[in-house]
Image 1 (cartoon, rainbow, N blue to C red):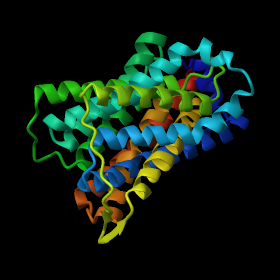
Image 2 (image 1 turned 90 degrees about the horizontal axis):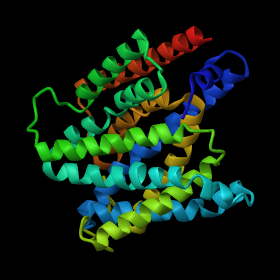
Image 3 (image 1 turned 90 degrees about the vertical axis):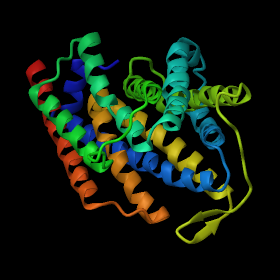
Length: 322
């Protein structure tokens, strides 16, 4: 877990300034690659794939891509995996498999936008966890940024007209929120000595195994198709979006997300990750022809402002601790 001293080191002037800049870059890359997953997956679902099958193969491909680099990053220190078995289990079962399973079960009972909004209350959960567990009381600016970003999400997801809520769906969406919050908190942990590539690969491997077992148990339907996948009037072989899901939206996104969290801290990284919603809208427009409405662009501006305010709040909190 991150400490306030870690946050001071991340946000202080000098060499830590480049650490902050690189952290923001990794966070944006992670948000963009995660944001692409919805559009790629929708094409597969329309072609006859089940969500469970698409997610399982996505995680399996990512684990395979990262296997060799992860082994090299360990440099023979295999004992790190044994010593961090709990961390890997939490990351793979809760942050990867559990989050995905909960989200897809949520959308069975409620609108996708509503489920996504509930899941993206994860930054608020991260603030609460850091406050209760580590005594990192959020400042006024951090809380203000959280409120502004939350309002932006409401506008981006166009929920002002109201939406029907299912108690079961809300419960599953809250489970996805816990998974997302766990992802940010565990990704920010540096004291374990486990390289980001090793954590991502081992967690993805365990998550993939859990998803396959869930499919065999009938918890998640597993249907595949070899039909061509259509995007904006064009069609591509089914394996093209599958590779995109595995390599870009899983391998790249998880590794860059861990790198971002370790540079920015779990709270700030979780708020920058809200940009995933904006990237998802852009990719949906480019690949599926779903043009965002004006109110969604306004919501995007609110999200950006909220992220900036949170960053300022983190700086003030770190300065006060110093």
